[in-house]
Amino acid sequence: MFPEGGKVLSGVSPEEFLLRLSRAAEVRLAEPMAQHTTFGVGGEAAYYVLPEHPAAVGEIVGLCRGASVPHVILGAGSNVLFPDRGYPGVVISTERLTGIRIDGPYADVLAGTRIGELLVRLHRVGIHSLDFLSGIPGTVGGAVAMNAGVPEGTIGGLVEHVWAVDERGEISLLDKRSCRFAYRDSLFREERVPILAARLRLDGPAYDGRALLARRAESQPLSSRSAGCVFRNPPGDAAGRLIEAAGLKGFRVGMAKVSEKHANFILNLGGASSADIRKLIDIVRQKVYKSFRILLKLEIEVIDG
Ligand SMILES: Cc1cc2nc3c(=O)[nH]c(=O)nc-3n(C[C@H](O)[C@H](O)[C@H](O)COP(=O)(O)OP(=O)(O)OC[C@H]3O[C@@H](n4cnc5c(N)ncnc54)[C@H](O)[C@@H]3O)c2cc1C
Image (cartoon, rainbow, N blue to C red):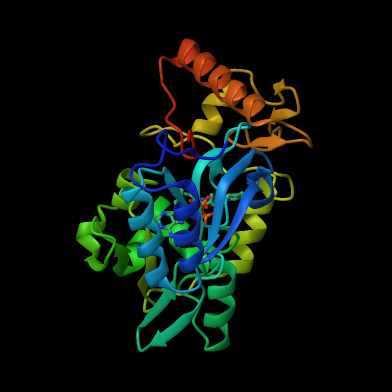
């Protein structure tokens, strides 16, 4: 499970690697990823680290690169699927990187801040322009990486610039164009660039978050364990409609099930394995392809490790 000298680590012993890692942040060994994902599945990460300031993320990434240890950044874990066998490298949690600074028509938000927490803070000063994001259970960093959104808009549409870790492990500022936002995609997702913070515009139109959330609760299984929509909508269609039309609503593999309420949600009924969910994903893709000749693309991030 742990990276061993010569196998995964290059030029540094596992003891030295751990020592250097623990100088940058709290390190937990063999941390179960099921506890850090909304699916509630996934085995142990070899190292789970909790940096408390943005510069530490650069240090950790630099250490991992130097030792050829795989690493991944994790927000609220609301759009990821870790394997049952776990992750043989470093999971960098943004849990402790939280903070919001309102600066005129902008908010500077640290990556680990939950969207819900940001909305509450903005409501206190009478700002409702981000309320279209109500009910998205992720962090600001995860949302920017995924360009999360709803039909009303995406978080990428609000980004002015992003502080990220560059290839030298240093902090760099990326303007909106450099972020390459696309449908549930960005430079950060494509190239696994860690986001430290984002500057978001606050001067858009106001939304009624409560009404949007109520509407969403009518059509989505929000109280069950899931990672939201599993597949991206193909151009001009909806993945949920295709899955339902392929007769897969309620289809189960082990304790993983295609939701009856919204067919683009896969639910962990309790005790599902990551393998159950992956098998169900494969079946859904195959059946939809057979029925409609459309190959669904994943929206969630499947971590291989
Ligand atoms: C019930 C439910 C409803 C949902 N509804 C919606 C919805 O309406 N619209 C929508 O778009 N999504 C929705 N989602 C999906 C999910 O909440 C969003 O994609 C969310 O923004 C992911 O944020 P996170 O912090 O949980 O990211 P994680 O799941 O932790 O990570 C997702 C990806 O982002 C990367 N990432 C995370 N943090 C960073 C960072 N700081 N820097 C760089 N990369 C990072 C990860 O490496 C991973 O590739 C829903 C999920 C659930 C469970």
